[in-house]
Image (cartoon, rainbow, N blue to C red; front, side, top):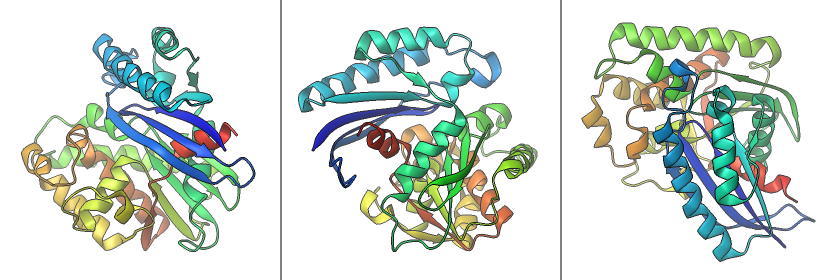
Length: 306
């Protein structure tokens, strides 16, 4: 077994996985998996820069993760950064700060590489839960990745429709106004047009949804009283339930969304945009259901270390 640590730093959250991996079989045994909402992408769509307070929140989480990694004695560490850090003019400040705390160079990867990691992490345990070719959709804070493939990805595309980006760009009302929702939907449809230029979205038999927006919609659709990863992982959520949950979220105030038992406080203000992205994807491809995976880019990063 090889003990590894993987960190995925996105626009909304930073996550850590410490795991033992069997290099021969690829079997992964989780030792510690955690997530912190840091909103690194705060204001990036508008300013093109990472805000000082967002950087400090991220570095604070890195210091916590450094202690965890040391405690478990991980042999290898990989830190991958995605949408917000790709877009920022001052990403060197981010790179330098992470290196100082963790002693490793953060890799600011392309959207296509992000998509490949997501596909690997999401599909490795789906035998029997899905059929045929997969369309893996990773709805992040700054971007959404689309990957089609079976054992390996054959086409991938990253587009700039993340829940944080869309919310910051369009939402000023509570709940969002009809015009604001329409503007979000228009951005999503334009991005789906771009994605379809390189990824055959409608050819896959199984839609697999990843990341916090999808798992939160699934948890609400399942009627959970508390967030339960085991119940959410590999669950199948019909389109009708996704549409019902999305309509509920769109009509809810911030306080009403906060009161939903499975809602993480860091997702309250961006979940509407994330749910709208998921619903629009299902409508575009005619998906009757989405298979939800709790395994994603973080697992793909960990597997890449062996």
